[in-house]
Image (cartoon, rainbow, N blue to C red; front, side):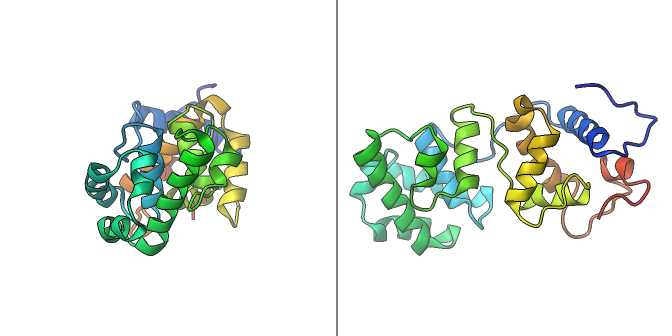
Length: 221
């Protein structure tokens, strides 16, 4: 990717995308998903649990759940109520427990006990939407994907990379701006940066490593 001069204020979307990509790579050279897991299945379950729940809380709960069942076959042998009792602190436990039990059964019965490696098959599983499937495809199987969560959606709008009113629109815009081979690391870097430097509330753009550079002409929200 062509290096953007540090003396030039990035103005076009392409210039801003190049600057942002370089800055994020500089700040976060090593990217690992913040959800503890051992394999595609434990990652899938952790991502399902992360809906409207912090990664920290998920990482506290998954060891308790996986001590009882860490494979699809073991999980489907638990009752929905047993799963719900363990994951209750993550919130939305009635829905998540049914989803985890249901997806485990389908993985065993329809996929030979292995997490499927395709978007359609993953998105057909209970409690698995496009974002969850994208995380699993990118982080478990290395398939280029750009999962968009609330952090990424917010930053893409703030940095005027997208005017998307939905995460689907934002995802499409970001995929057009950034090279495909950067997506898997970049979506994690967006998340790390949003949490550390660019929160939704109490944000001071003058102290933000990116907003203070691309926002000199009021280009941030």
